Image (tube, rainbow, N blue to C red; front, top):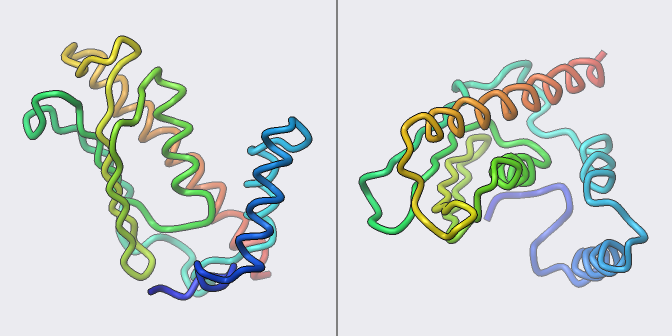
Length: 155
């Protein structure tokens, strides 16, 4: 298991904090965007790096599944990455059916099986390119923001 700043996944205090935040969000007393932003502001991931070791990559595979479009994201791991990916996919009108999340040291390889608003695999080539480009641009902007803030924190 990777060491993570919040502590072990099975830490009771960590889960209690999660349950409190979750209840606040459900009641409408807290905003998820603000909670994620607060976590980002207080956490430093891999501070020795000024830039990712590997470039951000978004790929779409429409051949490996008969029923869903597969979106693969390879990125530098950072606070809120999974949130940024899922928010980006949702904003494109996609429903996530299955996810496969992998993190090795500071690199994430995340796979999402998605369908459109009608529950169908996306087959329109232009929409597939739009999904790929939009998600890449969204994640690139978030990554740039992360590394800029990391650099400012180091000074």
